[in-house]
Length: 186
Image (cartoon, rainbow, N blue to C red; front, side):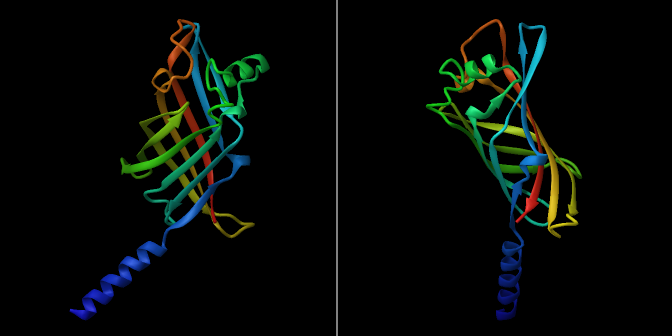
């Protein structure tokens, strides 16, 4: 009985210590979005400042993400539009300087695919969102000799549910998110 408990304790400890922190490589990652404009076209943009951390094992199984995106870093290739999006009409970056996400559950859907559910907080509103994920691969970086993982996360949020912008016929309510990540094991 004592031996069984010892073996079980070792297995639990080994699985707990197998977890490590992974950080996004900003030079090789992008937090992007797209929204319909005038019901005929799509405008794309991204956030230039973000911090994305995950806790996962060496195979990047069941990652738990913590995300912090700086709203003032929004970029749509149009300075006037960027300033308007930072204003109280939309993100109100001065009052709400960040968008955050925290994983609440993970579901494997295929060999390299998964669903990631978490709490998204934007403009002072927190709501659950689910993102589709794909693990593109894991390699050992030749320079650092540490593991790197490539992922793609996609999902859609309704901006009105987060009180971002008003109800207007010029903009779609749904915002498509595409997050391409290169994560480096720390």
